[in-house]
Image 1 (cartoon, rainbow, N blue to C red):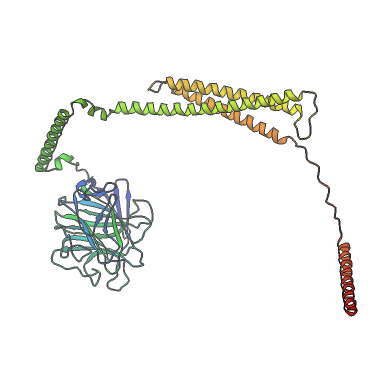
Image 2 (cartoon, rainbow, N blue to C red; image 1 turned 120 degrees about the vertical axis):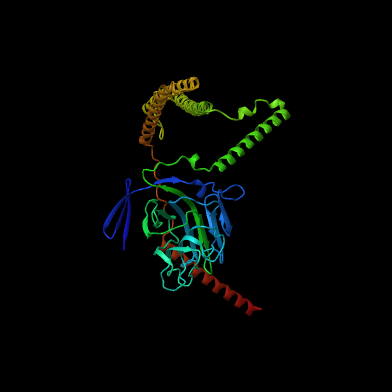
Length: 490
């Protein structure tokens, strides 16, 4: 029978078989002693606050690897103290990843009377008293119905049926593939008014509230006190079983006020914490006195290590103004360089025009005097704009240096920055116009060279070769006749 779960406002609507039943959501209260979440999940010594880990479990700063992807591994994590509230809810975020198409063996979430630190049921003890939610990834019975999520209860008298994947003992189940998902898989397990509800996030979307109903078990009697735990195991095949967070909430009936935190702490535990705090304070005072005796010249320096909220805000204001001051100084320096370059260029052009004179005709490849006058005019305009920009930056620099620590003068500073921005746009526009004018000046072209004449045609070349060949053969024949006549003579 299909079931759809939606949350709307303060009502939980369960539509089962087409019939809707509206019920108010219970109040939730977070229980930090039965939860963990990264970052900074572990202490420096590798321990988890309020939890213990056994077997091959590997805690880290942002997650707990219950078992690595190695063969025949077992691991688990359990709460140190029992949870003793009637109604509760847990949210577990985990990843099951592996290189194979089939994984093994799986992961289990527990609520049991005793801590099942080690055993054959997904790394935890068998014959448990409580409930286990099993994420079984290996098909032991060969029915091709894995991966599967099972809800298996036990009163401490039964052994888990491994050969049939617990199908004969399951109080509820659903076929869900939870391996190698793009996002972490989430399981929300709610036990409220003797009803156990298991809801799953399939890991295909980043929406953390995208849950769907997996199993619902009514009239389920669980022990009033128990430990929460997570275990996992591998066999011939192996997966990485990583738990990112385990969040526990106490559920209270609607309209019932939530008790303050100090009222829920037992009196003995409050006395213990108070005594530890007093001992710590006394030890701290003692260390202070010893330090002051050993270092009399450093009296009062320890107080300078810390700063008040007002001092921190004032320091941040001064640091921000100092950065503005340095940026304006850098801009002023660059403007000085541009101004010097423009002056040098104007001076060179002026000298060149003075040398040539106004009546001298321009030579080939040189600009006419009219164009030089235009360039001079544009350069002087650029020089004037850069000078105005420099003066504006200098004024802004002086005002920024004299600006007090508060917000006074912020409007004037913003106005100066707008003026600097407008002047920079003006300089950029004038430089672009000057470059365009220089590109439009036609440069004289050099005369093209005449084609190189050919000294010998192909026909003349072959005739010359033929004549040389005939002369060479005649010479050889004449030489042979002369040698033959000389031999007869002797």
